[in-house]
Image 1 (cartoon, rainbow, N blue to C red):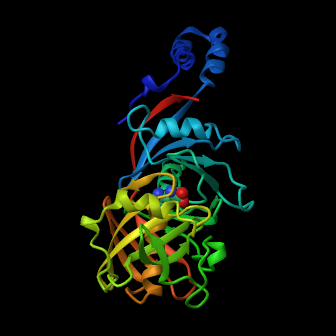
Image 2: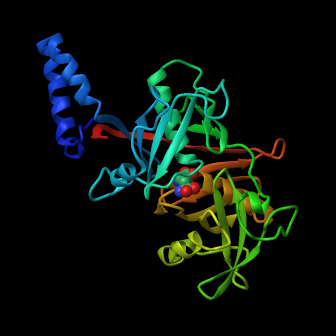
Image 3: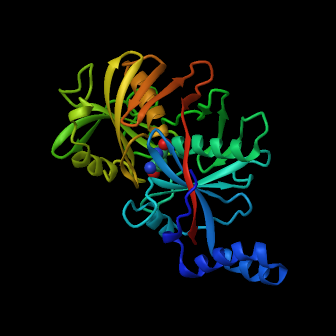
Amino acid sequence: MSASASALVAPSAVRGLASHRVVRRAGARRRCVAVAAAADAVKFYKYQGLGNDFVLVDNRDSSEIKLSSERCAQLCDRNFGIGADGVIFAMPPGLVQKDEDYSMRMYNSDGTEPEMCGNGIRCLANFVAKMDGADPKAYKVGTLAGLIQPEVRADGQVSVDMGEPTLDPPKVPCTFEATQDGAAVRAKMEVDGETWLVTAVSMGNPHCVTFGKEGECDEEGIKVDSFALSHYGPMFEKHPAFPAKTNTEFTEVVNRNYVKMHVWERGAGATLACGTGACATVVAAVLEGRTERKCTVELPGGPLEIEWRESDNRVIMTGPAELVFDGVVAV
Ligand SMILES: N[C@@H](CCC[C@H](N)C(=O)O)C(=O)O
């Protein structure tokens, strides 16, 4: 489906786009006017990965991000904008290393810039695969979290080498002492007057994974379907133990290969899925001895397949990414 989001385009840009259409019929003299006016507008592609949704901007022709963080926050608004959990920019290579294919930057729906987005990078891979057309559809993408390698498979699913998790507490970053093999595992954290047990993991961005409160944190973890996410989520996000704030994964163990997880994202609140969060959840579940390294993570938006490989310590995430519609917005 292709929809021109003209209500979101400023009057000057609407004029620019309208004259651009006229230009094609009316000849060269008006073409210059149209190109100048259309520079006020950018094409966007609305994408979703398990309901974690993004406005994706094709920024591959410039290393300058085309939309300000304030404009991104407006566009993410579900009543006054397009509606999204964040804005993804497909950028030219060179952010991490010279031989990468593309790079990716992102703004959360509140306008803050995270280091990485797991569902977002599957959407970006789907987008560039459609644009490039040719095989192979495996990419090296530079992000603020380092080099990430997605591959669009023949069945349409996107498999992503998300790199190695970071567990050293100051690097997550969090203020806990390491409790197990250099990691903060089942660390005690006071929230809302009660003690929770949390495991801190960075997948380039910070995650706080919890299976519940001390004393109540049994084998099954949190009953996520009845969990008061919007009550607890903001308290975890802004907890002083995580100086850069944190994404939080509230998790229930169904069996050793299957968990259910509800997420409260830093800078975006409750979302239907979080790719980096699903990876962090499996890392934490393995460190706590709750699951195997290969595990399905069921999110409100659907399942992600995660493997934390023993052979090279890297985390592999596999899941869908889908174009929903496209349009044009004013800068
Ligand atoms: N939904 C994303 C994560 C987006 C960034 C996050 N909110 C942060 O601030 O770190 C994912 O799929 O990983």
